[in-house]
Length: 143
Image 1 (cartoon, rainbow, N blue to C red):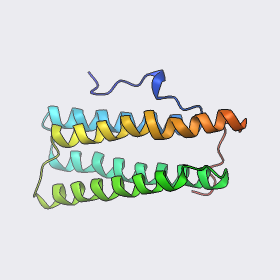
Image 2 (cartoon, one colour; image 1 turned 60 degrees about the horizontal axis):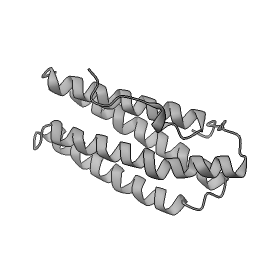
Image 3 (cartoon, one colour; image 1 turned 120 degrees about the vertical axis):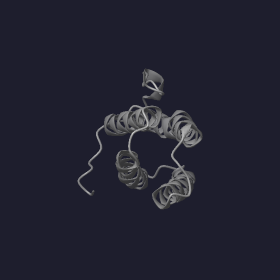
């Protein structure tokens, strides 16, 4: 059973970013599965690494799009992305060095942050897209 179920309330109206968000939910569910089944540390570390790498890719793509389309909330997004990147990087470092385990408390933080960010911050640029009549397709060839 997934810890976070994808549903249409997460859709922001930009196809590529909706797909990114679905993949992030999948990675969170994989992390949950690893925690609840007591997966070996190297397996959890691999999932966490993929989560970090994919999140960085996603944030870069979002920020590129926002800049390109003069999204007025870009500064807020960049700040939140940087704070999240710093926090998850610290968690990964602590996990790798054995200081802290990836546990349900950490997973709760990740789920809460992602859910709130998509439903509040990202949905705002989805509304911006709709109001401006911008296409939902995003050219990710920069990545």
